[in-house]
Image (tube, rainbow, N blue to C red; front, side, top):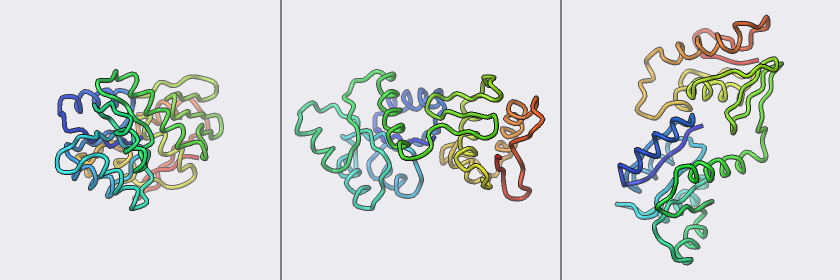
Length: 221
C-alpha cells in the first residue's frame, strides 16, 4: 500500500517514513502543503497522513481542496492543537481521523490500519486464488496451509497482483504501488523481486500462479 506523508518537521517525517517502510508501506514525503496537494492530486495513494500546521498551505486547506476535487483518499490529520474547535474544523473539510502530537508510532500505525480497513470494507479484504491466501492488513500469506515469509516489498507486489487477479499488471503499476516517486522505473529491480517472489510462492507447488506477460508485465491466477 502507498502512503503520502505531509509533514514539515523533517526529523519526525523521516522517523515515521522509516517505521511505515518497515511495516511494508511505500511512502512519499512532502514537506509543505502545496507539495502535498500536488502529489495527492497527481498520484494514487491508499491513505494520506497530513499535518495541520504546514508552510505554504495548511492541512485544513489541503484537505478541503482534495474533497472539493472529489479525491476521497482517507486522511489522517496530525495536530499539536488541542481545542475541540480545531479538530472539528478538520472533520468539517473531510478528514477521517485525528492524531494529536506528540504520538507513539504504534498508535499512528493502529489509526492508519483502521482507516485502511474501513476503506476496504466494501471490497474484498482477504484475497484467495487456488490455495494461496493473502491478508493485506495483517501482512500474512499462506499457500497450501503453510505460512510464507515475505519481505515488505515482496508482499506489496504480491498484494497488488492479488488485487488485480487475472489481469495484467504492468511494471509501471508495480513501481508506482511499491516504491516512492523517486524510484528509477527503468531499472530491473521489479523483475528481480518477481523472481524471488516466484521462488517463495511457486517453487514447491505444481501449479504456478505468477505468470509473465512478455513485453507488458505480470499476472496472477
